[in-house]
Image 1 (cartoon, helix red, strand yellow):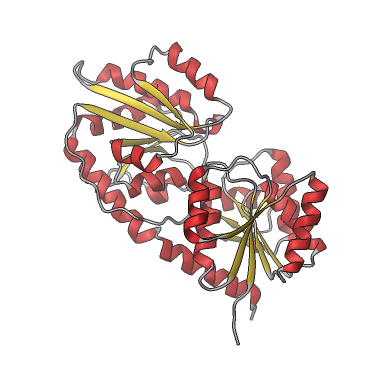
Image 2 (cartoon, rainbow, N blue to C red):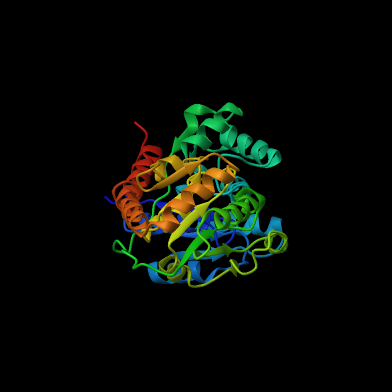
Length: 362
């Protein structure tokens, strides 16, 4: 008798972002063992990289359309048609849809998602109700997020922690010495990422490095703060040193060209962007938020600072900018740490255990 279950994964959209990548990675991890399909609540946007992953892994997927009531009705009908046993949700919006459609379709098991260690209060209240009253469990991708939301009243006995995973398709990279050092950040253009601190740190780095040192800073991503960031680049006189690369379709190549990765976030869960940078052997300078300390081992594969610590950030960047040997050493140490502790195989094993635990209690 087969132990295969029909499992639905939900995600709000296929916009560029960590939750979207983790949803598709989970589909890839589960589908050798279970019947899996992905429901995307909002048909747009659709990032080319996500569409390529869906095609490559042959992930069965459905886009909901129409007004919210129509989407919920169609979602519930799809769940019934598939004889779905379990739903995984990732973000507040798709968790809301999954909770209602799952209730209509009488799905036996539902698991929510927490992808950060902070959240807008209204979203947090809605998610707390779903976590405590509707979902069997919620999965936080960080210990910091789990601790934060338990303090906010989320039932602790229903909180699980599973770190993000990553498919590592690269070998360790030893970049040759270069005349111009490229520092990169990747993520949504939103206040959480605190690009102003990054720009102030680049300004300070320019002051403390020798005059002949050539530095360029790439800000990679998209989002509502794009114009604000551009104005800040002009305000700090960094037009020659900073380039915004908006919604690129060649992110792996950009990681290969970069030399250092910078994260100045004010809060995080477990950063997908840092993981991707480490997969390309990039040394990391990051703020000590979320579970960044699970990825970045201070002094070994990069450096950690407190939020908005411009002087510390710039000094750590200076060490890496001026020393090719330190860049190679820390970058390769990060690659090995990632491979040993955050591999696709470890991620897959943890989620398969959760499916077994939830659907076959006792």
